[in-house]
Length: 123
Image (cartoon, rainbow, N blue to C red):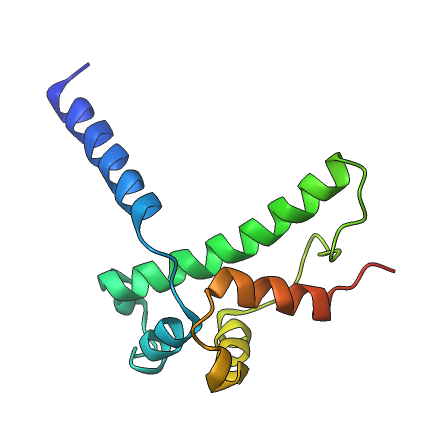
């Protein structure tokens, strides 16, 4: 392996470890970041915006994983997310802003789970 490849792998590993060790983002933190971010592609270069984006993607992936795990263990899943949800980043931000202030200290993952139960019930 070349030194550049080794360095790239090391940096990718460290970045993944740092992301895994980061505390769960609360809805309040997410809304604060989303509210203060300009709407342009360059904003994704900001560390706070990248963390919020990763939290958004991660929370939806966690909900999908929870559903898959329930199905694999032959339990009724708490929600049935379709293959394509058509949830845009703007929809996601609007939903997080709609969380009552008294509940904004919960994690984004927990808020998304509640949203999926409401939006995609199993029929």
